[in-house]
Amino acid sequence: MVVRIGVIGAGMIGQDHIRRISEVLSGCEVVAVTDVDPAKAREVADARPGITVHATGDEVVADPAVDAVVVTSWGPTHRQYVLASIAAGKQVFCEKPLAESGQDCIDILESEAATGRRSVQVGYMRRYDSAYRALKAVVDAGEIGAPLMVHCVHRNPSVPGHYRKEMMITDTAVHEIDAMRWLLGEEIVSTQVLVPRKNANGVELQDPLILLLTMESGAIVDVEISVNIRYGYDIRGEVVGENGTVSLGEASPVTVRREGRFSGHIPVGWRERFIRAYDTEIQEWVDGVAAGRPPAGPSSWDGYVAAVVSEAGLEALRSGARVDVKLVDKPALYT
Image 1: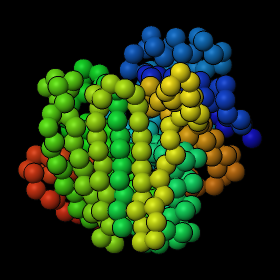
Image 2: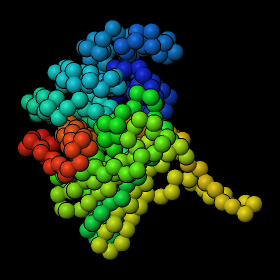
Image 3: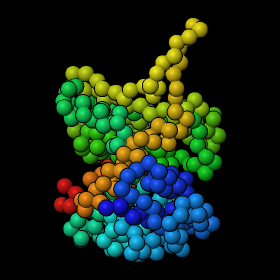
Image 4: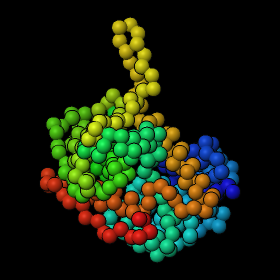
């Protein structure tokens, strides 16, 4: 079976997924697209024959030629298109965020739970990165004993002009929020934000920040968020356990030694660092759709928790206080 996919949103990540589905992955094809900018949707379709351009995302969902939906539109529209996909009985892959607020995510949880079957996957690609999967394998095997602390680093060389300090939590550190829940297999119970000396490269932005997450077990996660550090896109992680540590490997696959110095390569952006993770993520989702299986990746519950923890992080940023994370009871569908 070839899974026929409709894509809602033809911006940067949408076009990247269209390229991926059309040129890299197997068992799938893009048959429909829409964008708030009709010219952009038409440009994408003209470059790949066989793609129908629709005026709205709802039309993409309703198209009988579409088996499954990929949502890569502006964040505030995600709730609408995910709910429409659930109502249409079509599996939907939604890039983060699942919705703009925890309450909006609850609407999705309730709608999906009412069907009795998972149909939503949220785009947290770190779970598909080979280095993160190797890290989790060591933790799950108990090789370093119980995890006590996790040190995370999320550094960007720069960010665009529309980037605001709240996005350091909701757009940047949200990847660590999801990854830590998955890595340690437990929920986050509180957040706190520390504000170090300001980086002059950030202009008006308060950069960097340190986000502290307390896990159910009492383990502490610290996340350094630096988004104007200039030298490259650098993602690091180290788990400190009772009997040892395990960390992500160096970014560069090789080290060159010559003329009295050594050097390696640092990725310049997220697409370079996680390109294979994105490929694996969408391929595994497509394979599940083709087999008629519910999505096995990050669920609506995971999207909901990420939203609530992000909201707690924003409150902690504003207040300087430790803020508890308050979740609704987990529906049985996601246990």
